Amino acid sequence: MPSPELLSRVDHLVYATGEFYRGIAEIEQLLGIRASLGGRHRTWGTQNALVGLGSRCYLEIIAPDPEHSPSAGARPFDLDQDGPSRLVGWAAKASELEQLRAAAFRSGVTLGDVQSGSRQLPDGTVLRWTLTDLCCVVADGIIPFFMATGPEPALVAEIDFR
Image (cartoon, rainbow, N blue to C red; front, side, top):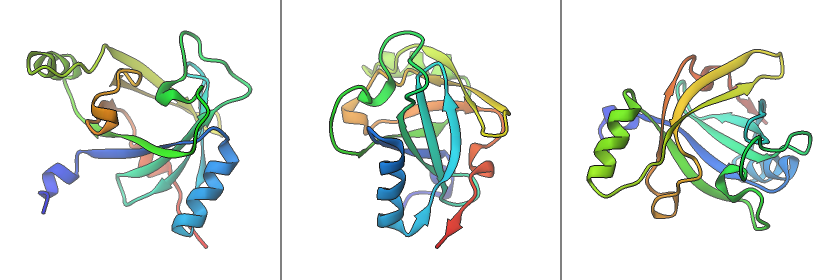
């Protein structure tokens, strides 16, 4: 059984889909829970919806945002590729991301550069964080990307049980 300390480092799971509302419907069908609209990652050209999995963890449904193209490069999680919706990775909470990235590199794991991320909520509020590179996939996404967050996104993920 994983320790409570280890479980507390899980920030969120990421479910990628090519079409936003289809992904929301798939998760509702599987879990019986309707996701809340999360907002838009304008830099990545994506939008998301969230399902709370407790007080500090959530499932993110992420899809291309037809209103915004990524500002540089491709969308994360191969969202520009056709394919079925799928669980693509998970985020772990961390601090001192540069030191973590360097230690991982010394151990043979490349996490990519530390970047800034943000999401605009439907009410206009902007959440900001730093994270390791989402496009640097390790072990088919089994090893997480790491995030240092501001406000806990799970706290704004309303759960709607149906």
